[in-house]
Image 1 (cartoon, rainbow, N blue to C red):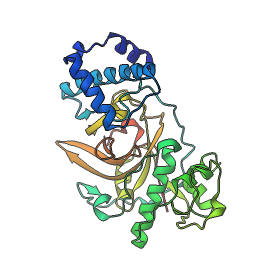
Image 2: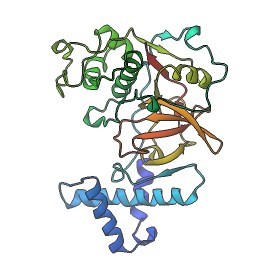
Image 3: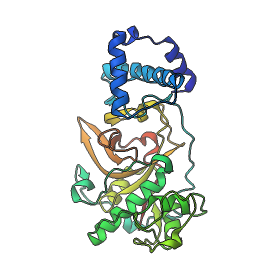
Length: 312
């Protein structure tokens, strides 16, 4: 939702509009602050944050009462922010190498559902925090999973290194990792330097590069996904995405061209006739469904089927 629209909601909103007495609303605010460890610099900042929180509460409750969207919203760690569109990313981030025909040869009968988490090759949900580089996190997770599938060993790689060394690189993220000789383990790479220091540690994981899938081919995505998790880019700029709580996500305002966020695609399924992709986010396990989101499958929802790649 645009900043102006939400500002108008904040101005119009009162505790009675939420159907809650002022003291009950105050209690909910205090409990939310404790839950997410919020402390503000002064009373002015707290009042501003509470205004955003109260507006978002109105949006969440109105959405959840409708029960028609197929997914729910919740008052998560972003609820005290004026949520607005993020800056788009235009994936010159796709690997130059396209998947070969034998990589994407369709199985005769893929299973109705699949989830790599049941195979023990998906690392714990991360919180990208101050790095602000979701594609570095998603790329590291895909490489970790690919290595675990091949070797049976899960290595926690340094997504800080990928952010430092590949953020402004001319190559794509997987090609960049190959060109710098691989990626070090998380414990070996110095944290928060802001500069590429890959010469200070020995790479623990190496890849040959990356491959991309043709856009809007969910059938080929399933074929590739049955071999390894995938990296996808999405439009996550909407308040419904940022306050997502559970269910099969879709938003008619989502773009299929402009994307601003990266996820690890770990599986797919179907619920009550709704097909979905299972995606791992990097906003901590307190967001969504323990850090995961189901996104509607087969309609290129939020561009999830347009920018798909994987390491090899």
